[in-house]
Length: 194
Image (tube, rainbow, N blue to C red):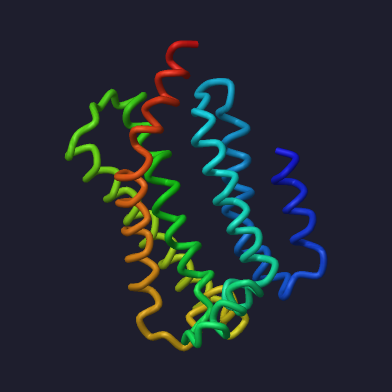
């Protein structure tokens, strides 16, 4: 919690654009409220809390600099002669990677599903639905605010940006399930054994 608030306070000090900061940070703040309200009734594994913290930090840093202007990724772009700043792609990868484990935990514990191909399909579908919903929100904000939303959209001239964003979330969800499901199972066993 201290880390999150420290990063949040840093991010609001002289952000690139305050409106973009608000748009990028609001999902992290909503998540914090939900986690606070549900903590006593449905405690998640420490692994999920750590992943949520990482995702919140990615969002907050994106809010401070805007996703298209994150300095480390500008350096990567310039050093490797890339067409764009790819911090946005990292954010969308996390948008699949982290919700996959959150959804996995909720479905295993509340829906009492068993680890299976069907469970993985449901989780990936949930992650794609979250990603598509976020793209629709971006579109709505852009329509409502006009050019003020350019930094929020962060398309950087890429006509396929929306499709890439959803693909990165898909890739993140798949890699998450393949790479850390076994670790997640260990954390689930520890939580159940308490």
